[in-house]
Image (cartoon, rainbow, N blue to C red; front, side, top):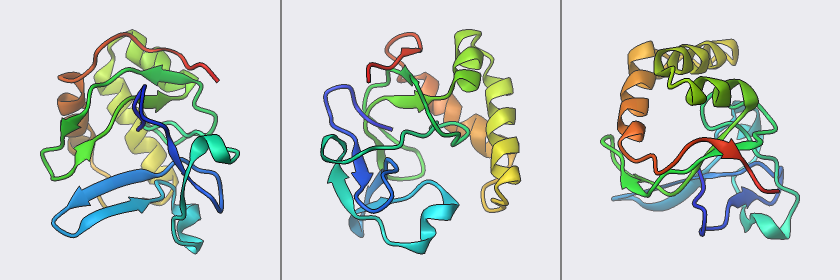
Length: 144
């Protein structure tokens, strides 16, 4: 998730865009992909390194679409800062407003990655229900 006017922050080690969490523990940057857990996140402005963009929905590589989203507080704590990246498959579901299909796609991708924690359809449906309240425009191709 990245904001239109807010630069992506990526890991200087692997190039994947990082997710930021802020809470009572302070601010932390984490990898979204399990395979990146072999090293700690090393935050760097994405303009200074080769960045690998992944889909914020199914975590597929080469997210070439963007869903404009305003910043908002997340019910589970923390906040979302900016736009969501999307792969072509998830973008097609977003264009049709097929949130059930998008939730199923994200769940299937999580299960295929071996992700067990939080891998329930209701978790994705709740997350996307909150996201929908903060979308500021249609999904579109990202400028690279």
